Length: 242
Image 1 (cartoon, rainbow, N blue to C red):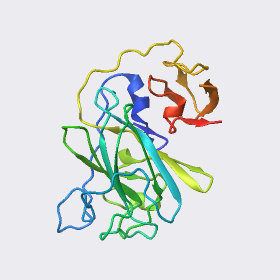
Image 2 (tube, rainbow, N blue to C red):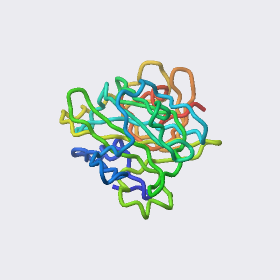
Image 3 (tube, rainbow, N blue to C red):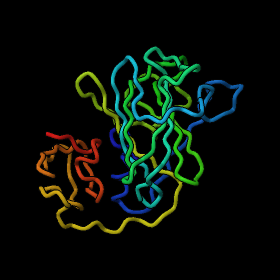
């Protein structure tokens, strides 16, 4: 399901009912002599960190990891690696490499830079995602509007991030759906959440809506139906403090 040539987030498509579609994997193909899905530049044992420092255009990538029944998955391992601003991979140390785990609400946030162009490829981020005790998903994330998206044979539009420019940097969102069965969440309560304010579980918010929570005002960044655990302070991908 595409929304303006960008796939709808899993948290939005879930509202239509039925199981979610798993995030597809990508066979990188950077080096034809190494038939590995992650390509030739993956390195195990990356440091645990959510910030990949370096020079370039600032980029944050945030979102959630869900199972097939739209239940958020906690403690999912997300291992990211990418090219630097010049399109080169560091194969000696661990620059622009790091792993993190989703929190109790299934959320993650990566702070990095926009990767440079690698020869023969469009702009992309690599990631491995693994729920506890489940198989590893190896895939890539792409940027909308890139000219090379049309010529990259590996590019998959289902893996496009939602990206917007904020100041001198960019903010991207993407929801992973892992092949993990489960029970769909029950209908969320409609009572006001702890912390007070106008934000409420079960309400469908549109981009630009303003709410209060815990004494602060927040502006909605993208349309969604509020769920328990998605309080404005907890989900910077959905709410920005006004």
